Amino acid sequence: MDPHFTPLDDRLCFAIYSTSIAINRLYKPVLDEMGITYPQYLVLSALWEKDCQSIGAIADRLSLDSSTITPLVKRLELAGFLRRHRNAVDERQVHVHVTEKAQALKPRTSCFKDMVVAKSGMSLEEMGVLNKDIRRFLAALTEQEHPQAAELAYEI
Image (tube, rainbow, N blue to C red):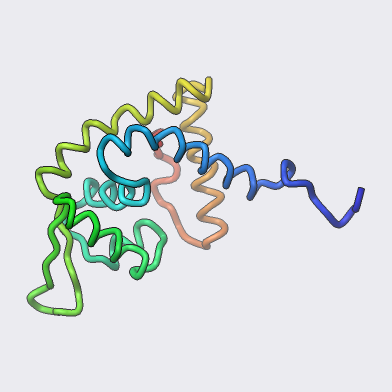
């Protein structure tokens, strides 16, 4: 065995990547029924937290570039889930609002937590600890402060 090579199964980055893919696959049938993709679900989730955000604010919340968010927002708008409008003070900014159609999807996503808990065999408390640890790890890697890290509730 090469001492300078770490097998994939021993790499934290691969474990996190693979877990993300597995969660996406678990969510996919429900998201397909709703007519949205996982990245679109994340955009909607950011707007369910706080409606009427700029494209830039959504991008910041999701740790993505605005150029990644814009096409997602446009497709969601075409599907009737969002409305966009230019900021009256600064026309360079586009604000996004959820529609009633998008609000109607929100309760349908509540099954995700139960699906992941059931598949994982972990308790809510264990999942909460895992979420807290991963967020603390993310904060360290991105050199960000996460003041709510101590109080994080379990959510998937």
